[in-house]
Each structure stands twice: as structure tokens, then as C-alpha cells.
Length: 180
Image 1 (cartoon, rainbow, N blue to C red):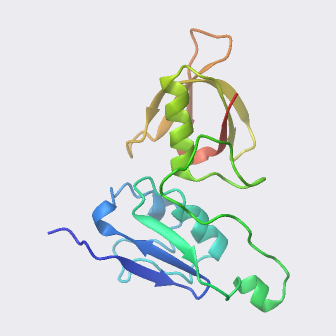
Image 2: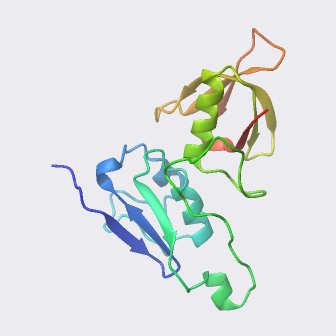
């Protein structure tokens, strides 16, 4: 029987919400932050094992929407409470992309589902995209294939001006995508 309960894990400034009935068990969370997300440990989410910013970013990469998060009101971040003056102003993770737009915030990674939405739309409409990777590489082309299976997890692009070449890019390495 599948667990239909919703589970909440908090560090006092961020609450991660896990809906096990939505989970596709891709392991993206555990591979991205293994100290926080350890499926064999109970409780399996340790909110003290990484910064709030790191946890929020990793939750945003959940492909199924089983993991979401929300800020705990009025608490501020640990850095703000310590007086470092560092403030995290990134939007909250949302499992459902709202539109086919570029990243709404400067210099930070887009949400995983937003990346998939834009790549899927562009591939369906033979529309070119600009992809920026975590290594700050930029690739322009038309998506020809999008494979979200855990063993592949990549997008294939046909570079602009080339009909015979395809480039494979790991979805985990993509920080932003925009239609061009």
C-alpha cells in the first residue's frame, strides 16, 4: 500500500514537504544532496545537513513534485539570524511550472520542471533554445530528444546551422534555458 500521508521536515526557516504517493524514486534528491536526502535513514530527510539555500535548490529539481518547500514565516535565514547580512531572495520551489519564460531571477539555477517544460515545448515546436550549464558553458540549438529516465537524464540538441550533429547535455548540469 502506498503512503498517502504528507510528511513535513523543517530546520526552522524552511519546511520540506514530501508527498510519497507522487514520488517517482529517481534518486535525484539523494544524488544531489546525499547528506540531506538518505532514503535508507529514518527520518530520511536531515534538514541540518546542508544550508537552506542548498536544500531549496535541490528540492526544486524534483521531477515529480513529490518534494516541495516553503519558507517558515518570520524566521529569516540562519545567516540573517547570525548577523552575516546574507539574505536568500530566491523564489520558493514549485513543482508545477507556470509559464515558458526564462529564469525569473538573476544568476541562480532554474527549477527542474521549468527546464523540462521549456525544452519539451521547444522540441515539440522545432524552436531553438539557449542552455547555460553549471560550468557556465552556453549551447544554442533545437532539442531533438528529452530523456528524463534515471539512467539517461539528458537532452539532445541539434546545434543551430547543423543538421548532422547532435549534442547530449546532462539535465543535471543545466542551470537555465531560454527560448530564442
